[in-house]
Amino acid sequence: MKSIEVLFTPADFYALRGRDLSGATCVVLDVLRATTTLLTALANGAAAIAPAADISEALARRSAEPDVLLAGERDGLRIRASISGGVDFDLGNSPREFTADRIAGRRVAMTTTNGTRALRACAGAAAVLPAGLRNAAAIAAWVARNARGEVLMVCSGTHEDAAYEDVLGAGAIVDRLWPGLGSVATMDSARMARNIYRSGAEDLVGAMAAHSRNARRLLGIPDLAADVAVCAVEDDLPLVARLDDDGWIREVVSGQ
View 1: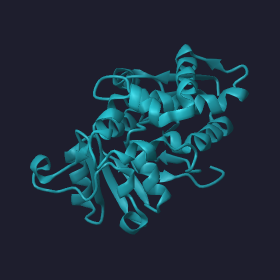
View 2: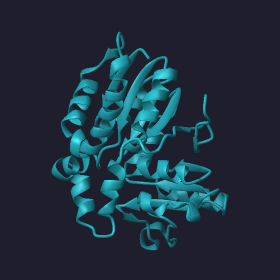
View 3: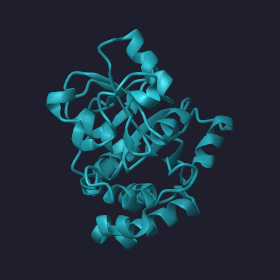
């Protein structure tokens, strides 16, 4: 890789539309919870995930391909018929919902408040890789082996603001890359993210509870509180997934 940079806010990823990404690797993080959830789905056997920009796009996927499951959230909660125009989504945005018995072999159209928009904003990059704490080591290894141009760690954020947990995730990946960065141009943003990660690494759940608006909100919802601990686990998913040209995210076959 030639350089590594962290983009902290949605304003940063919207600006990617005017940037030449043809040689870039974009690592997209929505730790709480979209990228963690879709990685969990793939680890549990989902065939592919389509990140939809909005509810209507997800519904269009289902209309064209009736076997596609619908997943997503608004304000953290599963999308219901009252806001979708009459359709209850099959799944929300909790990684704990995406069990093998529900999604193995299935394709899923997924729309979330920020995460799926961030993934879509990176279209045109040489590689778009969803990431979280759970696959930080796998992502770092793939980047070290394959990235040739700039590496952009794209934090999805919360609404229009930066999200602490996404910066933690970006910092975790930078930290795993750190020993081999050598002559790589490491932007201040990457150093900042690494420092934030290292300051909270001994207790990531506690760090999120103290500093993350998203984590505090989830912890205050009994049905979703356990998601924070699930999303804070490090390196238990040794997989890398990639957004393909057809708009579906699939697990990368070893060696690719």
